[in-house]
Structures are given as structure tokens and as C-alpha cells.
Amino acid sequence: MLSILLFKLKKGILIKMVAQKLLAYLSFSSLRYERGGFGGGAGMVNTRWVEESRDEEDWSKPTPPNERLEHELFSGSNTGINFEKYDDIPVEATGNNCPGPIENFHDVDMGEIIMGNITLSRYTRPTPVQKHAIPIIKAKRDLMACAQTGSGKTAAFLLPVLSQIYTDGPGEALQASKASGQQYPISLVLAPTRELALQIYDEARKFAYRSRVRPCVVYGGADIGQQIRDLERGCHLLVATPGRLVDMMERGKIGLDYCNYLVLDEADRMLDMGFEPQIRRIVEQDTMPPKGARQTMMFSATFPKEIQILARDFLEEYIFLAVGRVGSTSENITQKVVWVEESDKRSFLLDLLNATGKDSLTLVFVETKKGADALEDFLYREGYACTSIHGDRSQRDREEALHQFRSGRCPIMVATAVAARGLDISNVKHVINFDLPSDIEEYVHRIGRTGRVGNLGLATSFYNDKNSNITKDLLDILVEAKQEVPSWLESLAFEHQHKNSNPRLYALCSFKNSQYITQREWHVGRDRASLSDRKQRGRPVVCFDLEPWT
Image 1 (cartoon, rainbow, N blue to C red):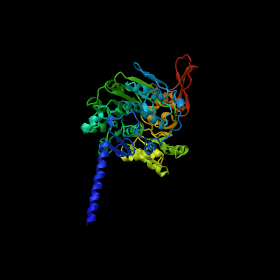
Image 2 (cartoon, rainbow, N blue to C red):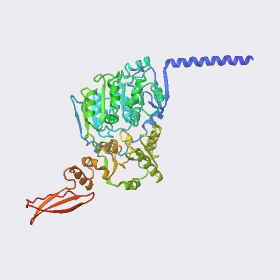
Image 3 (tube, rainbow, N blue to C red):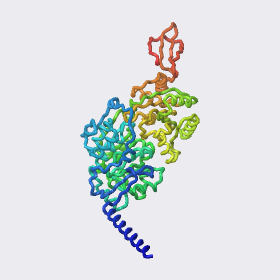
């Protein structure tokens, strides 16, 4: 009995000693939270956040490395880079006192953390948009940038913004968060879709590696409770879709009082999707600092009037940056347009897939959700490992489909327009427009899923009579990108252009033949020109000759 009492006494003393040691450790280190990687969002990715008297530490100094996390973030590789051709893209920057471009990343001081992560990312030199955008943003200027899709826009704003956060530290945001329980991000990135938001977030994790900055992501269609719990662990850079961010603000989870950097990515897409009221609510009707007090950057593939109005309202003495023709395609993408009747599309698709190989990542675009499901079922029955993504699929299904596609387990993905913008899957070899879109901007964004950041890609589009409304614009895109143009497409474009006057008359030759005037008409079909003569009695006219349109 005595031995048992002595054992319990010793055990109690031991527990007390351990508790004292633990309390001493916790007083030295306020919080240490580890889940294996930076950031978070819906419990989807591993995170590692270390907060040790953050407000007293030097945010410009890197934290110790984490080999497992480093492998997770930087194990991907870029192949097929064609920077020599990429450097030929014209760039125009307009605005007062515009900073000059850089030629390499060492030309501007972005600090030890950023330069280390650039090396880990195997970035050898900046892309055209990065050459100009990085010094502009580092000079604390507002920016409106129009650049070809897949041009490296994400790194163009993340690198200088994070660099500046590391230099300046958290400021008052950290103390305000501790006092109120709200999170006050220093930087906010708005994106139109959850896929693009997750993609930007993944890039932010890379460039926040070994820093004290914690990126977070919030988007609709996922468990909001999990996203709230993730935010409560700390948030310095927030990537968000507009609708979910408004929800978080109304719940009192996010405050924008200390937001120094605002980025609107794919701004034209956000307006197309009807997000302008939410964007204006976030920027103009809450606690976000006004323009001039914050730095604002807008990135868009096009520059329509609606985007110009948004830039006028949100930006202060901004610099306009145009990389390539606004809304154009990259010459790194080989574009092919083939005539395929609706009834022949599936068999033609099988021929293409067999020619390129089953293991090449291929993205097939269709117009409808029903069409996506039907085509996926057809390819599966034909023995192809494939998946699909569209708006009716759950968020979990969409994320799983993207994971299977990226990993190569399902190298063929059938998609509707929900995946047409923003997705950055670096090794997509072939984009197939099984159904062409109804407008040329959508075409540009679709084929931009291949040939990204200097990589080479192939885009094949099935064309038939249903696509006549896009003919002229499609021809212009092919000509500008120096692509091979089918003769039948030139003919149809000419026909479409002149349909209001005489849709079947392409060249008219009148010549005198005795008492008749013969009018010779050239009619152009899809693959050949046909000739017909029409005689009519009348006064002889002066002869003239026109070359037939072929």
C-alpha cells in the first residue's frame, strides 16, 4: 500500500514538472502550428505556419527550410520552353514616369526569400509581362495589364507584392487581428473561379515558402466552416472569389482595413460572370483603403469598355501595359482548323487522340454540360482514361478531376467553359475545340490552356456550318499568329463579310460577247470554286477583269 502511494506521489510530481516545462516553453513560443505546408483552404492542402512573436521579428529573413514541404511545392518541372520566340512579343507601356523593364530577376531587389524561391522554381529569366510588371509594382504604381493568356501573370504580381510585404512587415494588421479576432489580410487577390483561386493560392504558397506570410484561399462550393477555421489560424495574403469573400466579410471573419495591395486577376472574366456588384461592394463600400492609399493591379486578357470603366474607378494614375495584341493568341501554339460535320466529330476525335498518343495531356472543350458527360462516357467506352469538369459537378468532383488530369492518371479531360480561363496546367500538349465557342475571346482563352509560359502547344478546332458567326474573327486570329489558313476558311470569311450585298457572288467579270453581256460569277464552296455564266441582253459595257477569290 505504501509503495502504491509513493508511486502516485512520484507520478504527480513528474506530471507537475512536465506541466511546468510545457508552460515555460509556451511562454517562450506563443504558438507553433504545423500541418506540413503554407496556407490552407477547405482542408485540401497541407500547411505549416509558425508564429513566434511575429510582430517583433524581421519578416525579411527566411525561416529554416523544410525538405518535405520544399519537395511538395517545387517538384514540378517546366519543359519545352521557347523563350527565344517568346521574347519577340511586342510590349507597350504607357503612363507618366513609367519604370523601365528588367532583363533578369537580379535587376530589381526582391529580397533573400523571393530570390531563393525563384531559384527553387527554376525560373531562369522573366517573361515579357514579368519584365515590365515587376518594376512597375515595386515602384508602388497602380497597373492595368493586358497580356496573352499563359504569359506568367500570376508570378508577375505575386513576386513584387510578397517581396514588399517581407520588407515592410505586418504593420498594424497583426495587432488588430489579435485584438478583434478578425483577420486583416495585407494583400487581397480576387479571381473569378475557384479553380483559378486555388491555382493562384498554390503559387502564393511557393513564393511564401520560408517566410512568415501565411496565404489563405476562400471560394464558393466548399465547406465554409473549414475555411473559417483555416482563416482563424492567420491570414496575410488572401485569394478569394468575390461571392465567398462578401460572405466572409458579412460574417465578420475578414476585415479589409489594412489591405495595402489589391489584385483583380482575370478582371474581364469576373465582369462576364456578373461579379461587378460584389467587386464594387468589396472595393468601394466597405473598409478597404481608397485608391491612392492602397496599390491596385488589374490583369485582363481583353480591355473592353467595362474594364476601362473599372480601371478608371479603382486605379490611381495607373500605367497601362499591353503585352502582345490585346486578346491575341501566342505564336507558341500551333493552331489547326479542320472541317468536321457534326456526325463525324467523335470518329475524328478518336483519330486525333490516337495520333497524339493516349498519354499526352489533352483538353477537349464542348459547349454543354450534357455534351461533356456524354463525350466522357463515349471515350471511356472506347478505352480511354478520361475525366470531365463542368459547373454541375460538385467541388470535390471538380478538384478530383483536376488532380487526376494533372497527375496523368486521366490524361484526357472534357470541359465546358468553366475551365476555359485561368487554369495553369503547364504540360497540356493538345487543346481540342470539339465544339467551337460563339465568340473569339472564348476561343483565345480556351486554346491558351496550352503553350503556356513559353511552352509549345497544339490547338485543333472542329469547324462546320454552325460556326459561321466566328469565321472572320477566327481568320484574323490565325493570320496574326502566322498560322496556316485553310483556303476554304478564307473563302467563307469573304462570303460572311459580303453576305449583306450578294452572299454567293465573289468575283464578277463582265465582258462583251456580240449583243450579250456575260457576267461570270465565281461561287466558292468549302474546298473549291465553281463557275457559272449568266447572259443578259443589254448595252455593251467596258470590259474589266477580276481575279477569282480562291
